[in-house]
Image 1 (cartoon, rainbow, N blue to C red):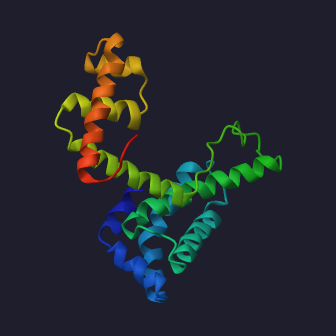
Image 2: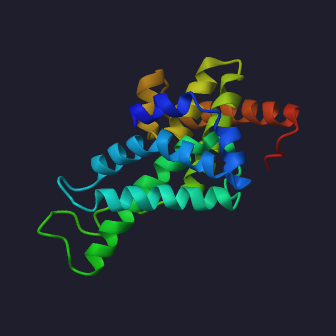
Length: 198
């Protein structure tokens, strides 16, 4: 969605979301102009080659997002580009799942079971915001190995052996290193008054 990123980067997404929520039709037109090409590129990337339904999905995505913005359903206006992206992927995945249930796989290898579970766009946006917040907190940890072990093990979901190899940690000491990193993260969170991790 590179083209979209360039165009939406020049937009004030917070103001745009607010205007659409207030019923400004011109803001809806601005939204479509800014995001339509990027949504089309993303839908094409995730759809089967030459699938004629691409244009219909693009229109559905744009309509769905505008409807949600009219309802003031997007909690974090700055997350608009990510929300649009998630909605597009969700729409394509849902379309092929529906076809699969109807037995319309057109001889393609993909079946509904092979497709990733469609993630609700709002959930995806919230998870992305949470991940960004955790990344910022990790950056404040004073010990680089703490940052890396927590990032790799929890955020990147690397297995223990991969983390040990990357950070030159003896596997027998991994849990001790992880425990110390978690303890330092807990101290940081408590100092910030963010959470009392039991």
